[in-house]
Length: 303
Image 1 (cartoon, rainbow, N blue to C red):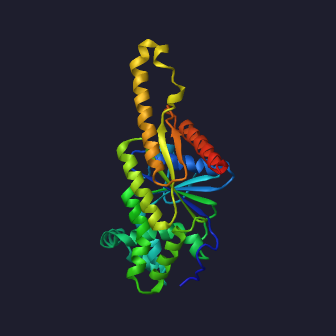
Image 2: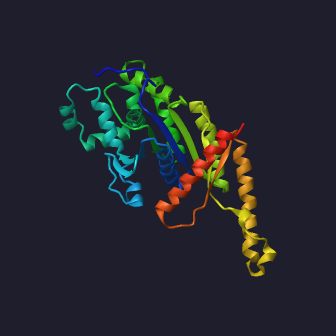
Image 3: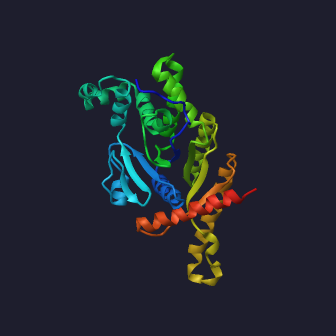
């Protein structure tokens, strides 16, 4: 077996981005990668699954191996079964023989029989540079376009769950190390994306508490697609636009209530992200990255 080193002795940071499906989680994750690259950091933007969202979205041939998107930003789509194969073969002496034995059919069967092992394989791959001297990934930050809500919590809870069932051995040691990494604010950061709507806000409030309980960290909350109501003229200014402007004011009232409810989670700040009215992906992501930078500057300036 290859030599291992203690957790948190090297490697890079991991920024998890999660949220209810449909809230713009993947766009915010991509904008986060841009934000960090603007700060001079090298970034790997990662998604999980068989099919890539970022491939058609960004116009790239995204696969398991990282491809260049922007200066200092690469994108990859990690297949869960491939990650599981890597995880298993790390503990086998003859890797070439193991690859022949561990066919795709075997991987699917194993993932179905022990789903937590798949979660550990993904987390193990993410954390590998911090856990193993032999694993190198030359980036400063990995931005993870994480699973949505419940599935994301399954991912976070998997190491602790398996650690409690494995009495000893490499699986027990690694799951304990991963659990420690996930709770370390110097290594892992959590960003939650929501909308100023009832159901997404309810789910975000619950998940905020769940992430805090599991990792001891408070995720940063981002309320996406916020309308800048303050810039609209008064209804009496344009009489024909009165009904439209009245509707915008009702939306503003709901947004304000949503922001207050999110603040009740205990989050230090709830960051508003604007609705970007454009069909151009690059322009939209650049504006979101601008908003993320402004949010970071405001938080750093806060007492």
